[in-house]
Image (cartoon, rainbow, N blue to C red; front, top):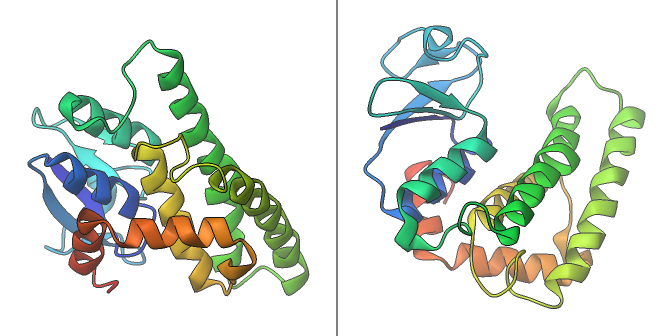
Length: 201
């Protein structure tokens, strides 16, 4: 397999899961501004959507969208316990969480990275993210990981969002349980491996 990624982008989540699962996977860096791979290839020829993450499977087919990719990687390594078994109620809860993070956090961050948005517009999105972080803080007050005691693909995605929070000057100390979750994630060896590989630490 090959994972197309951009350092510090939303591809960090599947990158972490690649390492947590032990999956055999090559990493291909992508310059999203130029839409070129590190070898100079046209990234649109790889993924016509033009964004990462993209996972090239062993048969050459492509899988896109981070929430789908992490489920695929987890299912490829069932002994890793990275996601509940297909068909269980817990699996649907994991899908629910992945969709929540994708729509209620991930996409709310996008305007904050866009220089064409006014400060007033960005303040609206910051307010939405703050509300979601407050709710997550309450959940993480009761358990170490989003779904309970067990690390899962959901945590890799939420960690990715806490990484972005620092880039747009969110002070996580106002959400102490979310901050503690981030610290737990940073202490995971495979998270450190992924971040070092991307030049983030």
